[in-house]
Length: 83
Image (cartoon, rainbow, N blue to C red):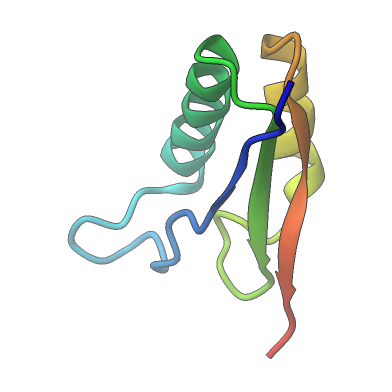
């Protein structure tokens, strides 16, 4: 079997601008991406951490939420951005 994963760059607005999701919506979107990827057979889901965006500064709750809703996918951080 071949491994196939993806790196999600997510939402990186400040949660206040037009079209910027708040932290709750950003997490829901990311969890749904992970669940959908698991359902179609993707092996890995990696999420970028952006320390200055409130929606994505702490990856562990997001990764735990995805792991709780999936069965076969590996989750982790792909890029840790420390500007």
